[in-house]
Image (cartoon, rainbow, N blue to C red):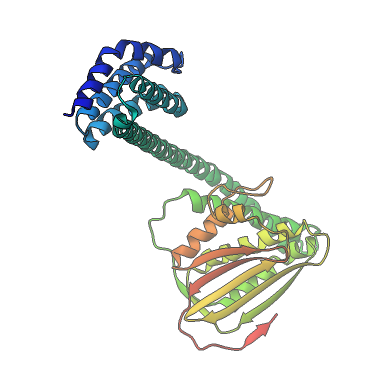
Length: 378
């Protein structure tokens, strides 16, 4: 140890109480801080580190040890980290000031000023770093807890909805059956077509809830079927809704493209996409259009359902396939979620793009091996 270092260490030892008194008068300590006494004790420990650094360089681990302790206390106290940073800088200024009045020549003190600043800089850096890491870890734990709680709520909701929906389906099946009997016995009776169509729509909505709530144990039945036939039948089925919504449909479909999969599940996907398009187009005053196209590219079938309705925002596009997310006032938020799950079940993918002129949902599914036919315009 040099003569200057010895003199400076002795000076700091002799003036410790005066330094501590001055520092305590200037620091900020919240009344709600549960570690108020430790703030002072930590200041004393920091003063001790500075004294030791004057005699010989400190290791990083010594500085980290105190920094980690302070960071943990700052997080647990719930007090803003800015108080800590302010108090550290007050301590730095006070020590520099006291060292300047030691009577030692400034040129001899210069390297010790640098060492004092280095100790404070490293301490501040590590303390804030550890503080941020602890806060991030707490945030992750909170997010995991929220996610787990949300999943539990969804499980309960699924169990409840499954029970309710099964109870609804029994009387609904009876009503649908009797409506068909009435239609057979009294074909001229007015409004039966409307009733039948609305009952089919209600049955479809109930099926949506069942798809979300049930656990699939048995593999769904797969068959090879024409995409052209499925979509043509679907457009015919939705004809009353299209007329009621004043919507024009144009379809460009390859006539001999086959899919190997569950026809009813994929029918539900495109039924939902078309129904969503009809709903969206009600916000358009005139010239409401839906375009359905089907092409075969790179062993995949690409089916697009597009409409000229309102643009979907970028934020909504990121969440649109998540469960219970909806932009409709009376929407359930499960339709597109079910579409995604059913498409993924068929080893496919679904996406959405939107601009001020068109919103398009695109489904890509592996095709069954068949010779391609010509494109037809319905």
